[in-house]
Image (cartoon, rainbow, N blue to C red; front, top):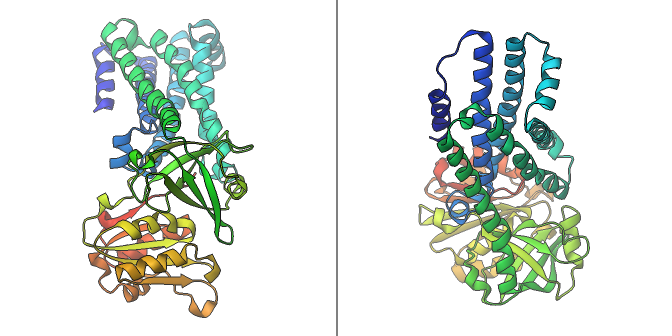
Length: 420
């Protein structure tokens, strides 16, 4: 709908398209308008608006944002190349000469060029191959440069965009779009976390080692239950300790929230998570959340399978305690000693009158492949279940087709991922 409105804006302001230069220039105008509109939508997707986080899910929003980012970079690149080419055809000059003229002689073009180069750089570091070699914290702070790129490009759009120069209504609508999205970003990404952290005063109460490389962080605070966090959701945590205060990482709740206590369980997978084991009681915390749609609200059947691996057990453990109905839990790990929270899971299973299936890769004679046949053996009527899936990317990639082969409808498979 929004993209159609952008095309309509171009159409209304275009009397005719004649010649190669006309086609090139107008194609550049269209791609520029679409890039500008899509940029605002990209920012909206990561504004952490509660209704979007709850109804859509943080991981899906992140995937849409990543996919949309590739389109925005492609549109911005196409806009740049088409405009330069079209103008050079009109002026009968070389492409390089025309580029120099556009950048240095047209108003706001230096800002626009810098904004475009920043967008291009962010696109490069966000490519899958680059992300795998980069720490989360590095990627996160480089990504914040997007705000600078948007600021630089915005004035360029209004100053040189033919569709805005002579149309006050279009300019007003463009201002309203960007100011509205900017207000949501400021409120939900910055002011709301500050307000909640000051009100609830969260701090570290104790650190407990659950298994090799896995610790639980107990957090105390004032009326934490008023946050409305549901089992299966997560917060972004900023621990105000040396080396940790400058970044906020997502960790799921591993137990239901009590009025004065929350708990997360974290695997040592990087510098940030490894440092949590050294936190001292009393360390202050700033947090954002709750986020995520990995809750019982997604459920469509009375029966549910909770399928987890590794530290992916954390949101499933909270759901296992609180979700009504008939539940089955399958917990996969590399070794028996890696089964974190096993004592709690056994106690919950006994209280519910259900069973937990523990599957480990070692020793090899006990290993069970993650296949449709193996899943049906453990859960005979699997196709009648909702499935809550949480684990490492490799496990998730294997489990999804196995569940579909076992007859579980796609709409009943629920999973969230915190991949970079």
